[in-house]
Amino acid sequence: MGKLLSRHAILWVVCLSLCGCTKFGIEQRQYNKNFYKEVVATSESVVEIMEENYNGEELKKIALTFDDGPVDVDGGTAYLLDGLFERNVRATFFVTGSRVAQNPDLTRRMYEEGHMIGNHSYNHVNLTLVSEENMRKEIDDTNKIIKSLTGKELAYMRPPYGAWNSRVESYTDMIPVMWTLDTRDWESRDTQNIVQKVVTNVKENDIILLHDGYKSSADAAFIIIDKLLEEGYTFVTVDELLLN
Ligand code: NI
Image 1 (spheres, rainbow, N blue to C red):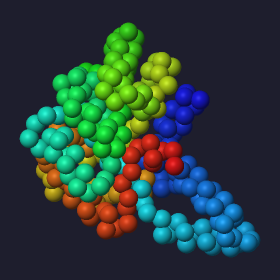
Image 2 (image 1 turned 30 degrees about the vertical axis):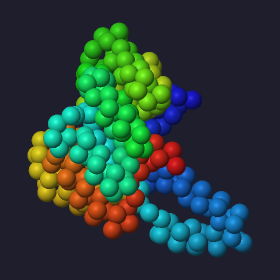
Image 3 (image 1 turned 60 degrees about the vertical axis):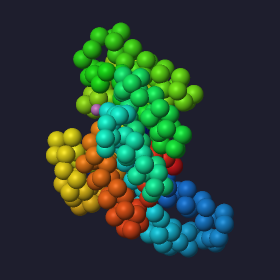
């Protein structure tokens, strides 16, 4: 099942980035349809009309993802977690094992405050270029250290540089999660630039790529959240986006 899911996850993310019609969208409509069939609807045509109306009112889901942390600097992960907490918003953190080892308290805090944690390798390596043994170690050591801190097995991974191949796929059951909107926040380090990239391009079911080492990214995330909440978006973790 793991293998099947992971292939689907890649396909979904590719599909998400290419078009608005997603596998989740279809599943969501089928779910709503069943809901109306059971609860209120009397005929297929009524179901269809209500379905459309219902979807129109649905909150549009998006996921903010932060890579490469946790980082203990001014304006780093703690600052970001404070702002997310104030706004009651959950995000997804793809952490590296080496930074988790340096910042166990920040890692526990991510978990305790309801954020999703994913694996981003131990040393931020390209998993397709290292030896088989190192590839395994990069994945497993990261899972191990996070489990030791949170008690939780990780299911999702964002491979550094988005580098994923059949060798990695055949070793792990983890679900690779890429992104649909790249802010290149590490490059610009410019809050307004990051905000503009997101608010002018964002669409339902986007997975937005940011990094939690920069105050400019955290400040941008806060502005993005405040603005998109007003526009009817809701912020969910990656697992909620992929599986609901
Ligand atoms: Ni990274």
